[in-house]
Structures are given as structure tokens and as C-alpha cells.
Amino acid sequence: MSSPTVAVIVVAAGSGNRLGRARPKAFVTIVGRTILERSLDEVFAVVPPPQVIVVAPEGEMDAAQRITDGTAATVVTGGATRQQSVGRGLAELDPDVTTVLVHDAARALTPAALFQRVIDEVQLLGRGVVPGIPVVNTVKRVDERDGVLEELDRAGMREIQTPQGFPRAAFVAAHEVASQEYTDDAAVFAAAGHPVSIIEGDPLAFKITTPWDLRHAEQLVSTSGVPGGAVTATRTGIGVDVHALDDTRPLWFCGVYWPDEPGLAGHSDGDAACHAMCDALLSAAGLGDVGSRFGTDDPRFADAAGAEFLTETVALVTGAGYRILNVAVQVVANRPKIGPRRMELETVLTDLVGAPVTVGATTSDGLGLTGRGEGIAVLATCLLAAL
Ligand code: CTP
Ligand code: MG
Image (tube, rainbow, N blue to C red; front, side, top):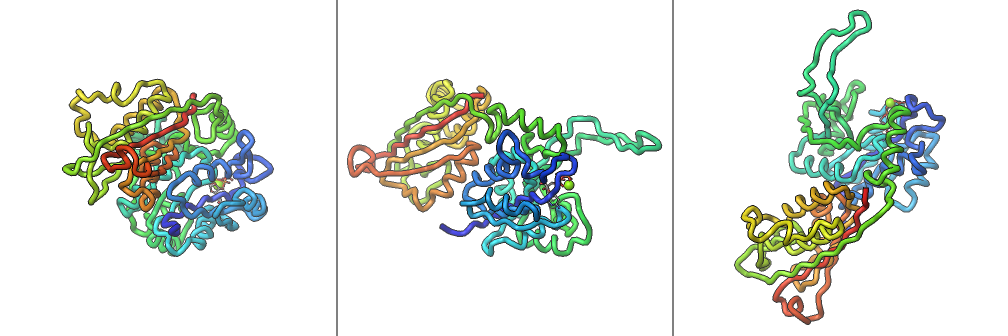
């Protein structure tokens, strides 16, 4: 397997003074699993797997090693400040890494999907990228003596979260020349003159700082609505789709374009993989099937991409109160060859679904319509958690 081009540095070396526990914050548990473990669960769900660097407090190196045992993660000792801890992590980057994410372990419930979006955006724009959420409360600048000094316009404000992502070379250089302590990694990057873009953050990426935050995290984890949360009931689904090959059309399959391959006939772009996934998800949620949801007589879907159906389906399923745990796809076809592009397909589909998607393939030994090369068949299954 090729070496990762993305690295995630998880900073966990703080002491957690404001939480006020005996052990450093990252080693405090939320319903039986440490804050660091819960953060890493989501980092390890990112595809393709990034290089993972954990920055731990000196006194917890053994505990951090135990937590990462059996994984490819590197553990290093942190510094006196967060910025120094990030610097220790940067020193461990693999040679092939071109995109670096820095993440607070304290944001323990941050979903893998947010990491994926930050990575995509850094790679698309070549800029720094930070997630942010709108400020909901009125914001004023105040001081002790005079009280309220100024009303601030919250419309132009965002609360900034992690993971924050950067092009490696520029970020490492910015870190080396930083002459003061900045409030976050994007500030270090911006101080060196580089642009930073903002993407929509996720409320689940909140930072556990105070005892109230920890209790909030515990309550969330006790329900099934969050990554790693309690699962009280699951539902499985199945979907099958078959399309004939059509030489006159381009091939869109598993959400990506396949040059030099015959296309698929049928409604929309004929992406049988996306359609089978939609059927699996809809069946698990008891929401009917692709035919009844996205009817062939509806002109809106005439040329719709498979990815659009999938996005729409994910919204329907989550809107109905389910969390998608995973989707498994099995392609039955002579062509296209899935193996060489498996990682890319899994990345694209995982991004679209917001939960791990795996793609496998088989031929049908020369038998039937797939064996004769007349068409492609796809089976998909999925597992949902009921909220
Ligand atoms: N951090 C770090 N090294 C430091 C300080 C902080 O790796 N020297 C990490 C923390 O472990 C945390 C993240 O930076 O995951 C965000 O910091 P914060 O929430 O402030 O954590 P603490 O510094 O541990 O908490 P406090 O400020 O309450 O002591
Ligand atoms: Mg701190």
C-alpha cells in the first residue's frame, strides 16, 4: 500500500486544568472510553488511512502507547504550550505527507466526516482550512471597569474548531518562524501571510473544557446520535441494482468517472452502485426504494448523478432519525476493475455517506448477464443505528 499523503496530529498533551481532574484531560473517560480513544476512533475511520501522530503528556506516554497499540500511530511527548506540542508532532511527519491536519484530542466526538471535508478542501484549494460554526449568542466586548464597551456583529463571526488543515510545506515553515504563541494553528499559518478558508463545522466538534462539557459529552454518548455513541437498536438493509452496458454513454460508477469504459444504460447516469446503496439505506430505514422516492417520471432526476441520489438518500435516512454505521458494496462485473481504484472509490463514497463504505468486486465466472459482459450488477447492505 502506498504511504499516506495526509497526516493527522492529535494534540493531547495538555493538563486539563479547567476540567479539574487528577489525570490529564485526554485520559479522562467518557462512558468507559478515554477522550483520546474516542478522538482516535474517528481519525482511524478516515479513508484512505492518514499518518496518525499522537502528542501525549510526558507522564502518560505508556498510557498513550497502550491506546495506540496495534495501530500505525506514532506517539511523541508534548511541550509546555499547545503550539510547542504541535511542533513536536510536525517533527514526526512522514516524507510523503503533503497535507497536515491538527486536531485537539479534547474535541472527542468530532465525526470522521469533518476530517474528510477538511482534507478535501485543503487539497482542492491549496489553502489553510478551518471549520467554524455560527455564533448564536449576542457578543459584546466588555471590561471590568466600564462594563459594555462595544456591540459586535455576530453575523460576521464564527466559533473556530479543529481539525484545521494545511498544505504541509507552508505550514511547517510558518511554524518554524512563528515568533509568538498564537491562539490556534490557523493563526500561525496566517501570520506567515498565507490565506485560510472556512468551512461549515460540526456541533459535535465542541471542545471538552469544563466539567459541564464533559457531562454534555457523556449525555450525548449515552444516546446513539453520535460517533461511538450507545447503539440500542440497529437495522440492516439490502439493495440490488442491475444495468445493461451502453457504449454510447460515459461510465459513472461508484460516484466517479471511468474513462475508456462503456457506460451504463438506464435512468439518470445509471450508476448502479450508488442506486444499490440508496436502496439498501432506504430499505433499512423503512423509506421505500429508489423507484418510489426518485421516480423515473420525475424530470428532476432524468440526468441526476448517482452521487446526488446518495446525498438525498442520506438526508432522508438521517432526517428519519437514523445514524448510518456502515455500507458494504459488492460489484458483480467483468469490468471495470475495482481493485486499482478501490481506495479512491471508498474515499469518495465514505465522503458522500458520512460513514465507512467498503467496496468489493467479483466476476460471475462467465455466467449470466454479468459473465457475458452485457451488464453490471451491484449488491449493497448497510447497518443503521436507530436514535
Ligand atoms: N494541548 C497540548 N499541549 C499543551 C497544551 C494543550 O497538546 N501544552 C492540547 C490539549 O491536550 C487539548 C488541546 O491542546 O487536546 C486544546 O487545549 P485545551 O482544551 O486548552 O486543553 P488543556 O490545555 O489540557 O486544558 P486547560 O487549558 O483547561 O488546562
Ligand atoms: Mg489549555
